[in-house]
Length: 259
Length: 212
Image 1 (tube, each protein chain N blue to C red):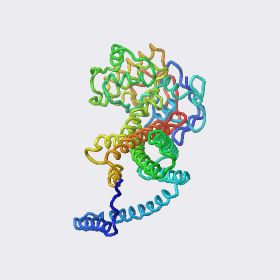
Image 2 (tube, one colour):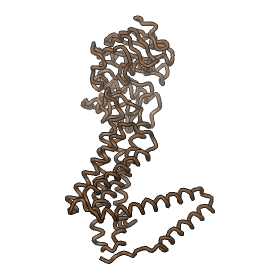
Image 3 (cartoon, each protein chain N blue to C red):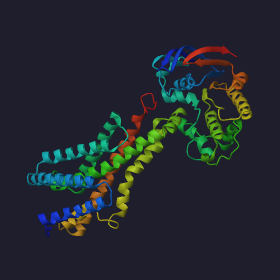
Image 4 (cartoon, chains in turn purple, green):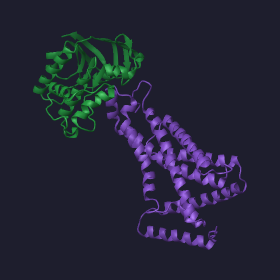
């Protein structure tokens, strides 16, 4: 495998100058976003530098505990990110359902992909486990965020229709069927779209990374296909768990609406 | 059929004692905000009372399976919800919710006849007027033949002549099926013509019950 070009400090500086130029343009145009661009660039730099050193250490000293701790941190961060991203207030109950769906859905997909599909040995080999867990967690997080938003908003705006169904003797499942289906669709759409456009509209990040790292495009594609299927599986599983359990939190034990 | 004893709901309702007789037409009258709709919602178990006890067929509501209860005691809201789809879809969705086998078009037509609704079954329900939606929702409840009909101002969007016709048909139908009807209304004419039992509410309390 041919190694990739190691970027020198000057080359990275050139990349920052590019952003500085952009900030100047944004400022001249009077769009008040230069602060956000600056802060997010800085934040990204610090986060990545830290992660780079942590990963370098973990790759050197491969150990199951490290792999598990890193996956746990990513998962917890993702769950909190979902809570913060949703603008409508979430009940404690639905937060529990989000955490449960994310944990179960992601772990099940990850275990299957690491052990059965990629057959990583030893299973905790951080070079494989961590990036793949990252991609699965990140995509599931995006999916479930959209699912949460659609479900909560759907229940609130269609409260009258849901209640009308209850009045006619419907079970909560029947009464919220349409909203649950909409939430699932909304959550799956970005993943489905990205699969459809993949390779034609854009080259996926992981594949790009492997090619830049010197791997042959064919190997990169094999991994990309496997990982993409893993992502679809994990997003479907987490979102399915979430919507199937989530709608119930809008009803009390006497099958009355709580909102 | 229903007995209420010392029922309190927030500061909206405070009912010492109320009995709703079986197989009779009961009208609930009273000014706006006096708790009439809340009373219907309590009986349909869409909300739970804070104190006291409501019994349906001698069993407290809290011991009923809520879904089973609502299939026996069905409510029609004042501004009834119409679901996406055609007139037929809106009539049949009730059977789906109740898990009852659907009926033939001819029976749907009969129910629409009772409420004087003369649009095609395949018409899109989005294009209906407020009064038509109200009658369509009424026909939907009629078709399901619950033991008790809880109707919240079923004629509020209808003109006088249609009200008279629809109410007459409705009462006849309910009587024929030997069902109980409990109706909130603002119309003195409706009370005079059809009520067998009148309940008057004021500021959340029952101020009058009488046989008509």
